[in-house]
Length: 123
Image 1 (cartoon, rainbow, N blue to C red):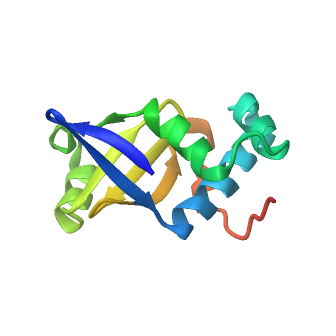
Image 2: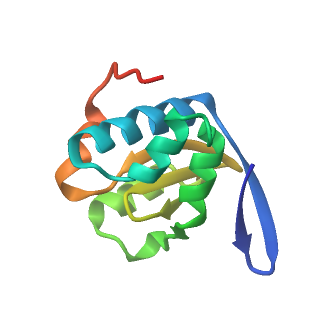
C-alpha cells in the first residue's frame, strides 16, 4: 500500500498489475541502459525487496505535482484525464487515478524512449 499526505490526512492507494509490470520493465531496462537505481535492482533480484516495496520506496521519495503550472501538452492531458494525480520522483512519474497507481513513466530526458518500447519482460 502506498501513502501520501493530503492536507493533514494520509491517503493510501492501491497498485494495479499494469503499474507493477510497467515499473518492473522500465526499472530493469533503465538500469540496464544507464545504471539507475542499482541498489533497488540488486535488492529485487536477490529477493530482499519485493516489487510493491520497491514502488513504495521510490514513490515515497516523490512529490505531488501541481498540474496547473505546465505547458499546453500537459494542460491538454489534464483536461482529458482530469481525475488523476501525478507524483514526480527523480527518475519516475507515478500516475494515480481514483486512489490507484495506474502506471509509472520514466522522466529522465535521454531515456524517455523506453516508455514506448513494448514487450520487455524481466523476472
